Amino acid sequence: MTINVIAAQESAQPRARLARAATSSAIVYSDWQAVNGDDKFDAKTSPVIPGYIADRLVVEEVAGMDETSEDDIQQVVYRQLGSWVPSVPQVPGVKTPGEVTYPNDPDDPTKTADPNSPGYPVIPYVPGFTPQGPDGTPVQPVDPKNPSKGYLPPAVPGDPTTDTTIVYKVDRQHAKVNFIDQNTKQVLNVEQLSGDSYSKSSYTTAEQIAYYVAQGYVLVRDGYPAGGMTFDADSTLNQTFVVTLAHGTETVDPNNPGVPGTPIDPNNPDGPKWPAGVDEDHLKTSTTRTIIFRTSDGTIVDTKTQIVTYTRTATADTVTGEVTYGPWTAPDGSHVPDVAVPGMPGYVADRNVVPGVDIPVGTPNFTEYVTYTIVPEQPAVEVEPNEPGGPAQTVQTVTPETQAIVPEVLTPHSLAYTAVQSATAAPESAASLAYTAESATAQHSGVLPYTGSDEQEGAKATGLAMLFGLFLGLFKRRKREDETEETSKKHDDK
Ligand SMILES: [Ca+2]
Image (cartoon, rainbow, N blue to C red; front, side, top):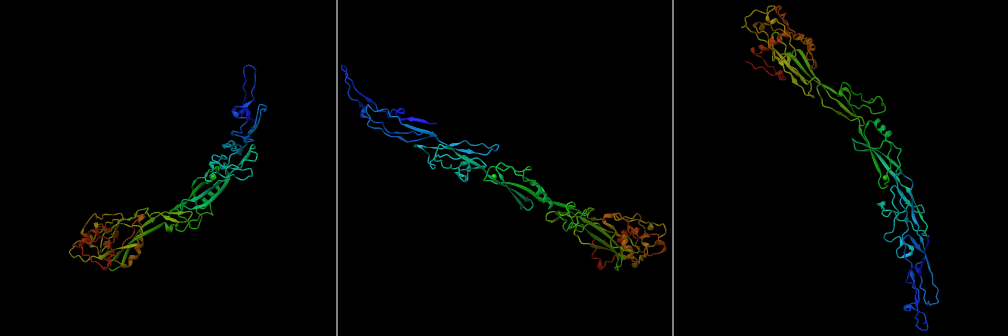
């Protein structure tokens, strides 16, 4: 479009006006005179018209005109300015900005503005893209820290009426996926990703997660999009995704221990192996209380054992092999029951019961003693020796659960037993009296050895404990040096 600006017509200012006077009778004209003596066209400066550029700045002055001068027509031609024209690839959601017309010099219609002048336009910012100049190099951002402020335009071409195409090149975006060990807080791996703005990555985490699971990890959280991540349009920010993994654990107990060195998961033979410390030996322990029945001269006549078994669990870290144990517990209780002291004809024991006791885990095996002492002669007792079927021959079974030892019958006959014992017979009965805490109801099958008169053979030593217990106070009891280990209470002499 061209605008023709004719200075003489556009403005009254440059017009030189002429006038003359006339008389009334005979018309006599005076000479033409320039009004106010102004006989020239003044110089005319072309105006600035935004978006257009003039071909000349000033229409020069014309002087010395008279009544014979022709009209003077001068033309100033304005042509439309060109623009910076953005060219942005077609991406859904991305709008191509409008073109930017070259700016006018505010003081010179024949020029475009000085690029350093205030208010000079910028090339628009399009997120995810970087504009390039005509030479294919990126244009520089006005503020390198904030490209949204736009870019410095390339120079206006020599012919300012021609456009300059600004090609927007898509930015390369970068992202990373951090695989984190939740237990140690360490980064196991960083996967670097890159792609065009707005594009979707084909990467998925499945393969690497499977790899770590095979190493004994468990997946806590996969923060990476299942279908692949989409790159953003911010080149100043690298997207970060986190896959959180934790150490797997496997817990075993004595009934189902691990086998060190063998695969924890049989389906993953190359995966984590059971570490040391998960076998049964590390998961089970016990404490044994041994009760030794002996005579005052040290001869062992019987032995009983009580065992408390303790178990615990072990939890193995399937990544590091570290083993953590649970507390020890006694599945059947840590209390061993009372043990009734069997009677032995002719002897009196130093106690009638070995009390039950709680045995905390870690207690070493220990031994308690019951000592039998020969009953002294009792001339004052004038009773018939035991008769068959008499009260003293009653056989009473003593079981470990028996708490109170109360004879059903207390008669002088009970004192008539002749105290004769055979130390040499003791060992054979020791083993048969052993029992464990887990089987406290096991039959007490032992028979204490003794020899006696025919009248006494019908009486079973195992039943006599109940009677002997009550007679303990009737007799002086000798205390031996080696009884110091006894833990049960003593009966005071009367
Ligand atoms: Ca980015």
